[in-house]
Image 1 (cartoon, rainbow, N blue to C red):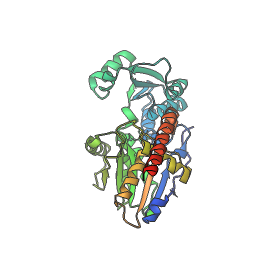
Image 2 (image 1 turned 90 degrees about the vertical axis):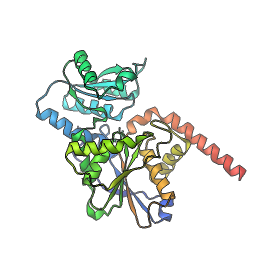
Image 3 (image 1 turned 180 degrees about the vertical axis):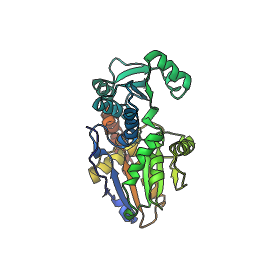
Image 4 (image 1 turned 45 degrees about the vertical axis):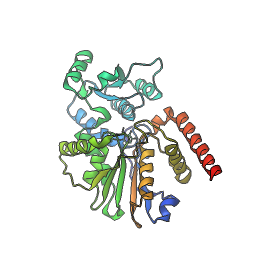
Length: 321
Ligand SMILES: Cc1ncc(COP(=O)(O)O)c(C=O)c1O
């Protein structure tokens, strides 16, 4: 079943630290729309799947991702449900046992093609795509993360669920490729400012990528957005003790589970901004929960270790004070 029947609404999850500064934190939770095609994934896939079906194509939809890619997982399930064959081109050699995410993908009929990291880096080059065609036969190409103009169009519907009446000062989401943010930028009600928090270190290239995606999708760049480039905690996939603590505190306070690759870093960035006085009293800040919880299975041990480190460090700090 595709996610067809859902409505999005804001939930107040303001932590005490925000309330003390009279800043409201509201959650736009995209995880509840479907158990597998959750978060931003459905919005990125829906028009791509519709275009594929409308064109009456029958060859596979091929896309790219790592062993824990939420996009590959969602694509495999969406393809399985819609009767569309799928191929996942996966970064790195095939291990003896594939990740739980890829096991799911294979069980939903996705063909997995493992390529070396060097090859994977060429995923956007025409020559590499041609070599994949020579190897695998004809396919419909979907870039990494499913991020193209149709994905941006789908993501406008995330921001479209907010109305000017929601009175949002900041609409914030985590970024990988920036396609989700591009959708938010083009549909956020005036005068909402859109903030993106890249999961990658050194991601200022995303300014150009996001402008490029907006252009490809035919949306104007209204300039009411910026990237917060310093909440990556050391880079993609890195879990710091304070990131683990931030996720745990939020879960205890709100009952909402975040994951460390994207949404945890988003909350950490908002906490940093609050501490730096960047949200004035009376601000309403909306955080978009873009999902990724299926991939949490691969990170629980590391998260628990880092949380323990955080608590040990706190204990030591208190003892020496
Ligand atoms: C949970 C989650 N949030 C956010 C993102 C970022 O999406 P985008 O690539 O559209 O920036 C991803 C991308 O994979 C993701 O898995």
